[in-house]
Image (cartoon, rainbow, N blue to C red; front, side, top):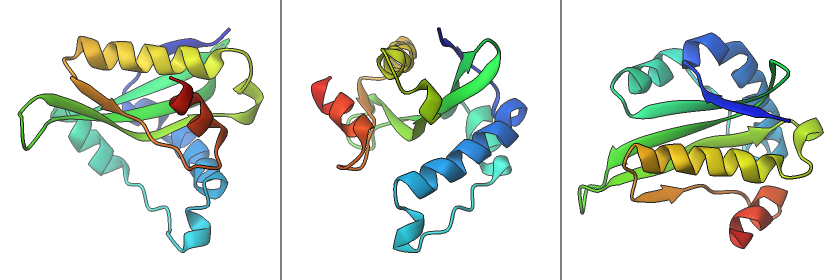
Amino acid sequence: MLKFSKEPIATIWDEMIECAKAHWVETSMCKDGEVLDARLERYEYYEQIGMYTEFVARHEGKFAGFCGMYITPSMHTQELLATEDILYLKPEYRHGRNALRFYQFITDEMKRLGAKKIMITAPPNNVTNKLLIHL
């Protein structure tokens, strides 16, 4: 069973960036010519000012996936909005209710922080998209 938590980005950067690279290939971003150039210092800055949270999924302590969420006031209403950066589970953990439970953990925490809208996206051909449509 996966366990979920919030963890500082600096402590999980190496594991996270490896998964981000796999996600990049899976979602065809690299095929569109986009180059992954994520920078720890930018993530840390947003984390330090309270606008970014990193969620981690672990199985028996082993890194199984992650989801970064930005939280910021709407420019129009000033209500807090939460927007996903990347939601990723390693393929070996994409079974049962793992993705659903991770999604619920993330959205519950964003609501607890005051988010009125939570936006998570996935490409149309991605299995995650089917889950999001269902939810």
